[in-house]
Image (cartoon, rainbow, N blue to C red; front, top):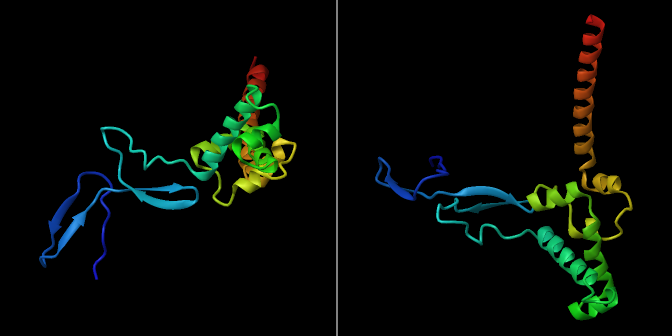
Length: 171
Protein backbone atom coordinates (compact mmCIF):
# COMPACT_ATOMS: atom_id res chain seq x y z
CA UNK A 1 0.00 0.00 0.00
CA UNK A 2 1.47 3.31 -1.01
CA UNK A 3 1.33 6.53 1.02
CA UNK A 4 -1.13 9.22 0.04
CA UNK A 5 -0.63 12.92 -0.24
CA UNK A 6 -2.79 15.93 0.46
CA UNK A 7 -2.79 18.81 -1.95
CA UNK A 8 -3.93 21.75 0.13
CA UNK A 9 -4.46 24.36 -2.58
CA UNK A 10 -5.50 24.30 -6.18
CA UNK A 11 -8.35 22.68 -8.02
CA UNK A 12 -9.67 19.15 -7.74
CA UNK A 13 -7.86 16.91 -10.18
CA UNK A 14 -7.41 13.27 -11.11
CA UNK A 15 -4.05 11.73 -11.94
CA UNK A 16 -3.49 8.23 -13.27
CA UNK A 17 -0.71 6.32 -11.54
CA UNK A 18 1.75 4.18 -13.47
CA UNK A 19 -0.33 1.10 -12.65
CA UNK A 20 -3.45 2.77 -14.07
CA UNK A 21 -5.11 3.45 -10.70
CA UNK A 22 -6.66 6.91 -10.52
CA UNK A 23 -5.62 9.25 -7.72
CA UNK A 24 -8.03 12.02 -6.85
CA UNK A 25 -6.67 15.25 -5.39
CA UNK A 26 -9.21 17.42 -3.58
CA UNK A 27 -8.15 20.74 -2.05
CA UNK A 28 -8.85 20.81 1.68
CA UNK A 29 -8.11 22.90 4.72
CA UNK A 30 -7.48 21.33 8.12
CA UNK A 31 -8.31 23.47 11.15
CA UNK A 32 -9.14 23.16 14.81
CA UNK A 33 -12.63 24.12 15.96
CA UNK A 34 -13.60 23.84 19.59
CA UNK A 35 -10.85 21.36 20.43
CA UNK A 36 -11.44 19.06 17.50
CA UNK A 37 -9.80 18.90 14.10
CA UNK A 38 -12.06 19.29 11.09
CA UNK A 39 -11.44 19.14 7.39
CA UNK A 40 -13.07 21.83 5.27
CA UNK A 41 -12.85 23.06 1.74
CA UNK A 42 -10.37 25.89 1.17
CA UNK A 43 -11.49 29.52 0.90
CA UNK A 44 -12.99 30.53 -2.39
CA UNK A 45 -12.40 33.87 -4.06
CA UNK A 46 -16.16 34.38 -4.39
CA UNK A 47 -16.63 34.74 -0.63
CA UNK A 48 -17.01 32.91 2.63
CA UNK A 49 -19.11 29.81 3.03
CA UNK A 50 -21.26 29.94 6.15
CA UNK A 51 -20.82 26.23 6.89
CA UNK A 52 -17.05 26.76 7.29
CA UNK A 53 -17.49 29.65 9.70
CA UNK A 54 -19.98 28.25 12.19
CA UNK A 55 -19.59 29.48 15.72
CA UNK A 56 -18.23 27.21 18.41
CA UNK A 57 -20.50 26.47 21.38
CA UNK A 58 -18.58 28.92 23.60
CA UNK A 59 -18.81 31.63 20.93
CA UNK A 60 -22.57 31.08 20.68
CA UNK A 61 -22.87 31.21 24.48
CA UNK A 62 -20.91 34.48 24.59
CA UNK A 63 -23.15 36.02 21.94
CA UNK A 64 -26.25 34.87 23.78
CA UNK A 65 -24.89 36.22 27.08
CA UNK A 66 -24.37 39.69 25.63
CA UNK A 67 -27.78 39.61 23.95
CA UNK A 68 -29.40 38.74 27.29
CA UNK A 69 -27.42 41.47 29.08
CA UNK A 70 -28.51 44.01 26.45
CA UNK A 71 -32.17 43.06 26.93
CA UNK A 72 -31.76 43.49 30.68
CA UNK A 73 -29.86 46.79 30.46
CA UNK A 74 -32.25 48.29 27.91
CA UNK A 75 -35.21 47.77 30.22
CA UNK A 76 -36.88 45.23 27.95
CA UNK A 77 -36.90 42.97 31.00
CA UNK A 78 -37.30 44.39 34.51
CA UNK A 79 -35.02 41.87 36.21
CA UNK A 80 -33.46 38.44 35.72
CA UNK A 81 -36.69 36.66 36.69
CA UNK A 82 -38.63 38.61 34.08
CA UNK A 83 -35.94 37.90 31.49
CA UNK A 84 -36.03 34.19 32.35
CA UNK A 85 -39.80 34.10 31.80
CA UNK A 86 -39.50 35.89 28.45
CA UNK A 87 -36.71 33.55 27.32
CA UNK A 88 -38.39 30.42 28.63
CA UNK A 89 -35.43 29.60 30.85
CA UNK A 90 -34.85 29.21 34.56
CA UNK A 91 -33.21 32.05 36.48
CA UNK A 92 -30.06 30.09 37.30
CA UNK A 93 -29.42 29.36 33.61
CA UNK A 94 -29.82 33.07 32.72
CA UNK A 95 -27.41 33.92 35.56
CA UNK A 96 -24.82 31.55 34.14
CA UNK A 97 -25.01 33.22 30.75
CA UNK A 98 -24.75 36.67 32.34
CA UNK A 99 -21.59 35.55 34.14
CA UNK A 100 -19.93 35.25 30.73
CA UNK A 101 -20.26 39.02 30.26
CA UNK A 102 -17.85 39.50 33.18
CA UNK A 103 -14.96 37.49 31.74
CA UNK A 104 -11.53 39.11 31.36
CA UNK A 105 -10.93 40.61 27.89
CA UNK A 106 -8.13 38.18 27.09
CA UNK A 107 -10.39 35.18 27.75
CA UNK A 108 -13.14 36.74 25.62
CA UNK A 109 -10.57 37.25 22.85
CA UNK A 110 -9.44 33.63 23.20
CA UNK A 111 -13.06 32.46 22.89
CA UNK A 112 -13.62 34.61 19.80
CA UNK A 113 -10.32 33.50 18.24
CA UNK A 114 -11.13 29.88 19.09
CA UNK A 115 -7.77 29.65 20.83
CA UNK A 116 -9.04 28.82 24.32
CA UNK A 117 -7.76 25.41 25.47
CA UNK A 118 -10.17 22.68 24.39
CA UNK A 119 -10.70 21.39 27.94
CA UNK A 120 -12.44 24.65 28.97
CA UNK A 121 -16.22 24.30 28.86
CA UNK A 122 -19.17 26.65 29.33
CA UNK A 123 -19.63 25.36 32.86
CA UNK A 124 -16.00 26.15 33.73
CA UNK A 125 -16.54 29.80 32.88
CA UNK A 126 -20.18 30.36 33.84
CA UNK A 127 -20.75 28.42 37.05
CA UNK A 128 -19.39 29.92 40.27
CA UNK A 129 -17.02 32.39 38.60
CA UNK A 130 -14.24 33.89 40.70
CA UNK A 131 -14.38 37.59 41.56
CA UNK A 132 -10.87 38.37 40.28
CA UNK A 133 -9.84 38.18 36.64
CA UNK A 134 -6.54 36.59 37.65
CA UNK A 135 -8.47 33.65 39.12
CA UNK A 136 -10.33 33.26 35.80
CA UNK A 137 -6.97 33.17 34.05
CA UNK A 138 -5.67 30.51 36.44
CA UNK A 139 -8.76 28.34 35.85
CA UNK A 140 -8.37 28.54 32.09
CA UNK A 141 -4.60 28.17 32.03
CA UNK A 142 -4.14 31.64 30.55
CA UNK A 143 -2.40 33.00 33.67
CA UNK A 144 0.92 31.48 32.61
CA UNK A 145 0.65 33.15 29.20
CA UNK A 146 0.07 36.52 30.83
CA UNK A 147 3.02 36.01 33.20
CA UNK A 148 5.23 35.12 30.23
CA UNK A 149 4.19 38.31 28.44
CA UNK A 150 4.80 40.34 31.60
CA UNK A 151 8.27 38.77 31.91
CA UNK A 152 9.04 39.75 28.32
CA UNK A 153 7.93 43.32 29.00
CA UNK A 154 9.94 43.38 32.25
CA UNK A 155 12.99 42.00 30.47
CA UNK A 156 12.62 44.60 27.71
CA UNK A 157 12.30 47.36 30.31
CA UNK A 158 15.34 46.03 32.20
CA UNK A 159 17.39 46.12 29.01
CA UNK A 160 16.30 49.67 28.20
CA UNK A 161 17.01 50.72 31.83
CA UNK A 162 20.48 49.19 31.56
CA UNK A 163 21.02 51.08 28.29
CA UNK A 164 20.03 54.35 29.98
CA UNK A 165 22.38 53.67 32.90
CA UNK A 166 25.22 52.91 30.51
CA UNK A 167 24.52 56.07 28.50
CA UNK A 168 24.39 58.21 31.65
CA UNK A 169 27.70 56.81 32.95
CA UNK A 170 29.34 57.48 29.55
CA UNK A 171 28.36 61.16 29.74
